[in-house]
Length: 460
Image 1 (tube, rainbow, N blue to C red):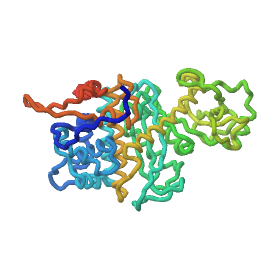
Image 2: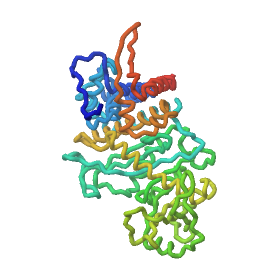
Image 3: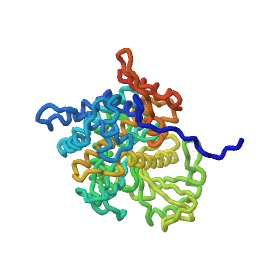
Image 4: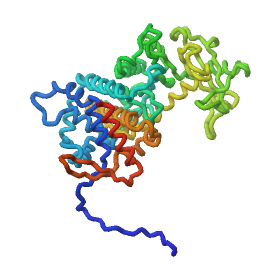
């Protein structure tokens, strides 16, 4: 019997009971509580209240972050939690959430950042931390957030758009899709891409966001090794000096100009070495060190300049600095020889991995960064912190609950929402307990239940 492609219709009614969607958000809410984020935020904002509060400010801010993780792009998104009181308990209203966001003024913003740092320390101690024996990479990059209405300090950007130009720092966690958001500096739309003072400020905030045991110790060879990576916008003498002063290594993109082009033409063929990937050679790409051919005396002692030439990708447009039909790029680092496996090819691979920050920013834009919803500057600065909280909660959930499940740890935010956060379940009551029963036919039902248990076990 042939099928004609029609779909059998089902009867639809609005009389279901005990059924909830977005049940996976409960994992993030518990994580915010167990990691100490809620309590630390309460302490940070306690002095903004004249008396007792009805909704704790830490709970409200973390709930906004959970809603943002779920896909909300405005404060009204907290209502998705309010509709599920059987699962989440009492949730603040949208006006209450807005008032709490407004309490995070310039005087309290550092305390909110410190609260996030304390939560990170606890999450790392629970098993979500990296191997401190290896190199820890902090990727710094800026992005454009478009404003569609008049907002405080919104301005024309270098891309001829209108909005803001925040500068962000992510802690690279290649084992999951998405790094940890260490710091974010909200800036006006006309802020410069290579403003050294902003890069130094973000670096200081990023280091303060790390647990004390992960921060570099200047002058101590056996301390944690921390690397700051940036594209050429961060390649300033001031930023490089700030990294050296704080015991942080650097790897910056370096502008390619006529001076570099002239050097490329003089490099003998035997001085070019094949570039590498994590699993072998990189076809059609070569690297060469030209430290002795360029005056680097203005940079910190030990700085090295390395070039890469590569066949351009199909459709790529060459520039006047590209030589012999090859795309030329350069980067500056102060990592001495022998530290990174693979010699200069290993250094080039490590620097090229800075490109992962583009994925971090893209996912952050899908997690509340695409829109700064408030009119006032301090409220949008607080919203940026909420976005960073949401990014961290997702990263810690992947690291603690799904580290052994690549399909969940390495999926991007849209897939993570579909598979985990938006899962449907049924609430049942019995034996003085409330149970959340995830649909057993859901492909990731067992992984969610196991991961939820792991989160609770990790924090005791």
